[in-house]
Length: 487
Image (cartoon, rainbow, N blue to C red; front, side, top):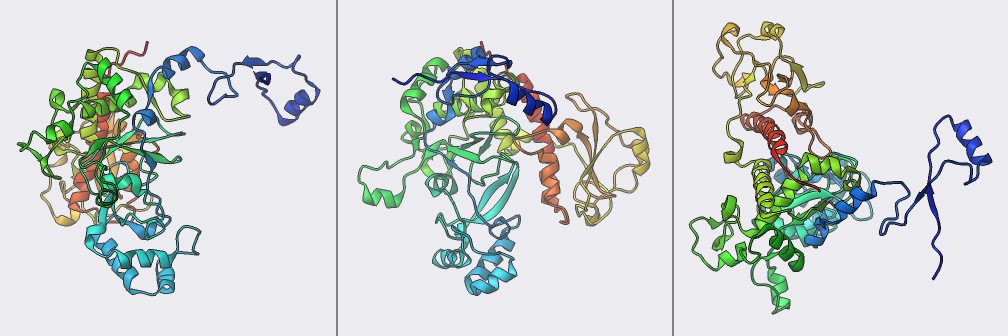
């Protein structure tokens, strides 16, 4: 057996000239070096907190538990294939079907063809699969659902649709965990229930998608008589059983076991024969959903993120086994609350007390949005402002400034302010923590509006932004409540 090389780590600080001199004249004996152990499988060339790493490694990897996963959809031409407006995208798809490839290239500034995406391939894919049933919502950024035309065919209208995973999300009721394998961004993850782009969570790194359920494929069933005839779990059976044992729950109590008990009072949109796993709450959730929510709660634990930060940046996250059934239940219920918030369920969001004021065209102007902290001087900017719905709609004006309460602090502490979309129109009472809050590679309260510069906000857009603010505030609150022992 070959002798292993010795590993050392050292640092030099100073000018380039000083470092070059030290390296040219130095030897391993007179440089300040620290020996490093051989730590498989990554064999890092830096020193780590090995005791902390050992604790981290005791947990299970998300990729081990949910072995089938893929990175998000890569379109190769986002401006062509994704749109905020369903009808605008549909008109573009119709144009793709009817027009010459070179005309399309010029009209939509598509540039030169690349290895895995060509205008003629996109046109051919649409021609073979034409119809509004292919219009699907796609998670593009946090809380920013857009529209795409999803046929599931690689090297078509979409370059890499990742259909081996995305088909289980495009057509069926499902949950998926979105996490990067490596990240430079904020740690954690984001839940989704449909198809997703490769930058849906991470700004710099590729987001991977881990679906909870697999659904049978008709074509596969025709080829393989032994293919599953019902939805199945994307969980490694042994690892799932071990987690359930630590959690004190029954691994056999799944949505699939309840499918056979129908008819159900709240049948799944998939059909009356399937149990609606999303309708169940608390202890009534199927075991696999409890485990999914436990993972989601762990990923949002501030203590977990801080303790294992250096390891969470280099591979798919490892999740600690539950210390006890009580810990599991607590963290899983917090994860459920976050899941429902992040899927923008109306019952989870509740009231959105961030009124929209101002007369104008509701267009997000260049150089906006801007956040201004609330102060008495802001009263001078109060005029005849319209409430939620936009100045252009001529909605009812609020009371005069002297009667308008001016909140300066959010319920969780910290200041509040106004988010201006242009010089005259703004969302009021927005907690500063919502404005700066990060999810993955983004600050959603800023990013969502920045992506709509030059665009007039509709009534629905205004309401959606108010929900985003509430979601971020509630996320911060729930995260602070997660008590996760890491000893």
